[in-house]
Length: 402
Length: 191
Image: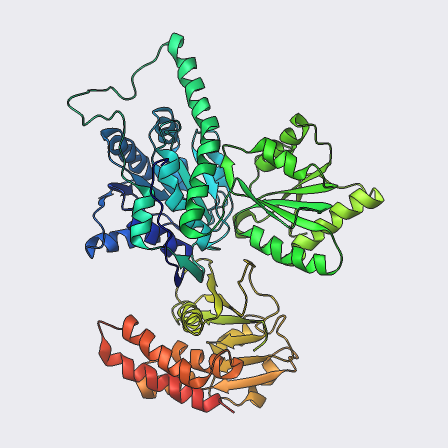
């Protein structure tokens, strides 16, 4: 990546859904192999990629497998053999990959998975929340979330340069909200094929199985005197990913003009009240913040883009000067206290000596709608807590039927 | 056109309400607007009530929720008036467009007190005459554009011909029929 020649791309104005956008990016990057098994709402991705292949528009080997367990197993085999590999899934599909997710990360295989976030059963439901991605949060994958079709397109293009960096070599999950962005047609600015191909470069693994001159063994047994060092190396790679993610984002900005970081701060510089949120609902929150600002509120949004590695220190610094933060989880973690972001953000605030009011909310489970009115209700509670000392309920569910 | 126009579609699975919403987003995009077109997904089955949404705007669209206070409501299947509260939140200075051979005065009593504009269009007859089949979504799309004025007739017609040529590349024989259905519906509701 460091020696990469960046070509400033011409902007191509289009309109497409999130699934179309990510499929378009896959065609442009053209990985070597894609094993996949269809599951709503990500089914369109393997479907559209298969159509590109059938039409002769890309040269990826598509492997139709019989389950997601097999999809990730095939991805591991293919990546270990030295081929740039990807897959796509959602919900129960990701859950069925669970054992292999850990193998992909611990064997340091830079696979890319596009996850279209959908809730996990039960009750069975096809709509969006983040319980699938959050369930895999400790599997050793880098996770990057998107607000809309534009961001998931841009994030996918940045995925391989992050994953394959020699000091990272970890798999990357590129996440978007099921149906809300995956099936919504919106405006998008695409990049030219040539620019994207140059940006993604070609995969040149240092060690791979189909290399007769330098044979390697992948996935061997490790006794206790090496296991812990292997895990520490993996953890160091995740720490290294921080710098690489920012470096790749900088290069991406040179190509596209679009700026990315660990998170986006929207009108937070002087904000008393900040909503910390991830995914499509961040757009709704920004709209509500603009309306609140017109009424004289000092409100802002901190939108998490990179969830793994978790940018704890940077988040704490960004929140240091506000009076209260609402930490919004689109996932329950059943620990009896909070959702995953609630736990991690409040721990991060404490470790970095930022002692502000921090309230955790659960919203949007199983596709429950989240509107600008809901955003305003949350801000009103934050303000009442900070200014009038009104006790605020932690771990409250937004838009729950009474 | 005001800054953002919000449209809510009510149909039954298989009638093409979702396709109509996506086509409307498509055709408005071509005139330089910011657009959003998306369906609300439930159990997908033929005949079940479905909802789809459009936002058409002069500025980038960031809201990702459903639409609760639409400017316009389009009802692709008249029987939904008995099953779904289609006028919920509908702005009084907006309009509801219903696929029915009846007159607005005959439909109004079914609209739970809605006092705004009521437009009826016999999309079934228009489609059957133009296409020989009942595909109500094409005439309802034209009616939605004619009533909401999100774009003018000429650029709508020109852009839709292009879209149909793309969409029906493998069955060009249906393009003229679809265009006739569009133009007939537009003429039927245009004031």
